[in-house]
Structures are given as structure tokens and as C-alpha cells.
Image (cartoon, rainbow, N blue to C red; front, side):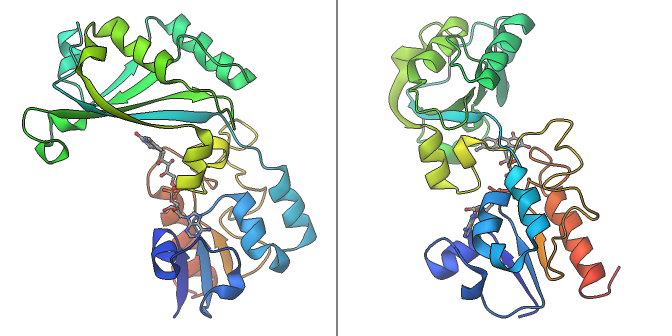
Length: 252
Ligand SMILES: Cc1cc2nc3c(=O)[nH]c(=O)nc-3n(C[C@H](O)[C@H](O)[C@H](O)COP(=O)(O)OP(=O)(O)OC[C@H]3O[C@@H](n4cnc5c(N)ncnc54)[C@H](O)[C@@H]3O)c2cc1C
């Protein structure tokens, strides 16, 4: 095998999470779609002391609390535009949203959280039985928080869609611990692979060029813990692959 790409494929193949590079097949290059904490666990013994120190300094951001709903019908948003939107950012005002986000960033739980809601079944009828709907939503909480945000999230939706609670048939909730169990990249519930602030925007996960490389020539990090970070689907992996092709395989 020329290169080993650790992602969901790694889990399916082995039936468990990869915890050490030594358990992987021999390869010319390894691209790890993981965050610094797992990279340290998986390949720390092959990395330099300085690089490991840099990875240990990496910090993670707010977590999320997520709910999936089975609904008896479409969400009765008062605003017509919201009844037609796939994704809705819920908050009464800019000030309310900013306050809620500041609270979560500071380690407190917001009573009126900023809620991000998706209602894809309105546009994709494979996602729910005929006449029914599905939706999910999340809000930010402090990293590692185990607070149950079900009522706070549903109150926020109900504010802008009176009658919402009456159409809930079933729900599934995930706090930050459940999020991390589901996907070890969600450290403390952080779905962005680490805080994106000025100190970790271009230098994630460490100050080096290219940032996808590590202190070991054939080991790369290609997750959202590298630039441009979470929320820019695929680009971290694209740039990491280019870096590995150039350095290990001498291809441009
Ligand atoms: C509910 C939700 C909504 C989101 N909405 C958006 C959105 O609208 N727009 C947006 O841009 N971003 C969104 N994101 C964030 C986005 O999903 C992430 O930023 C992005 O997927 C991160 O990419 P990644 O490659 O770093 O990690 P992931 O996509 O999480 O991929 C990492 C993969 O590696 C696997 N893995 C981890 N550790 C191991 C291990 N030890 N062994 C084997 N396999 C392992 C994981 O299971 C996973 O499959 C959302 C996230 C969530 C949870």
C-alpha cells in the first residue's frame, strides 16, 4: 500500500478505533484525519519532542449539544421564509446570539442558546416516511459540558414556531460526551477540530510549513485541525494530500 488514509475507512476495516500507527499496514505515507490529541496517541512515539510539545499546546473550542427529531409534520415557523429554508440560524437578535455564544465560550450554559437547525426532509423525501418530517439542531455549550440542553433548544424553536413541541414524535439527544464517543475527532464536543482563533487560524495544529507535515517525514495531519479548519469541507485533506504528494512522492 502506498499511503494509508486514516478516516472512517480505518474504523470499518479494523472494527475499532486505530490507537497506534504500529497496527497499520506499512506505507510510504500516513495521512491522519484526526486532531492533535489522537495524533499524539497514535504516532507520538515517532514525533520529535518539540513537535509533541506544540501539539500538546493545541486547544479545543466550544462543544455542541445535538438533537435529532422525528416529527409529525413540517415545523410551523411563523416566518414563511423559515418554512422554506433547509438551514436556519435561530436567535431573536444579533445581541441575543452574541450573548449566548459569549456565555458558552466563557464556560457557562446559555438559557436562550443560538440554535442551528436543519430540516432536510422538506427537500429530500427519503429522510422521513410519507407525511412525516425529520430535523436536527444543535447549540454550543462549554467544551465537555454534560448539561442537557433539550428544553433550552426546544424552547428556542417553539418561540419562533409555536406548536413545535406538539409535533415531536421522538427525539435522540447527544451531549458532548456522546458526540466524542460517536466521533473521536469531536474532542469535548468540539466539531471544528479545535478553536479557530487568530492563534490557531493559520498555524493549526502547529507553527510549521506546510502545516500538514509533522516532524516525521511520512506522517501527515489532514483533519480540520489543519488550515483552513472546520467548516471548509475537504480543503484540509486536499492540501495535505498535495503536501504529501510533493514531499514523499515528488509529485506536484
Ligand atoms: C451536526 C453537525 C453539523 C455540521 N454542520 C456543518 C456545516 O453545515 N458546514 C460545515 O462546514 N461544517 C459542519 N460541521 C463540521 C464538519 O463536520 C467538520 O468541520 C468536518 O467534518 C471536520 O472534518 P474532519 O476531516 O476534520 O473530521 P471528520 O469529518 O470528523 O472525519 C474524521 C473521521 O476519522 C474517523 N476517526 C477519528 N479518529 C479515528 C481513529 N482513531 N481511528 C479510526 N478512525 C478515526 C472519524 O470517525 C471520522 O470518520 C458539522 C458538524 C456536525 C457534527
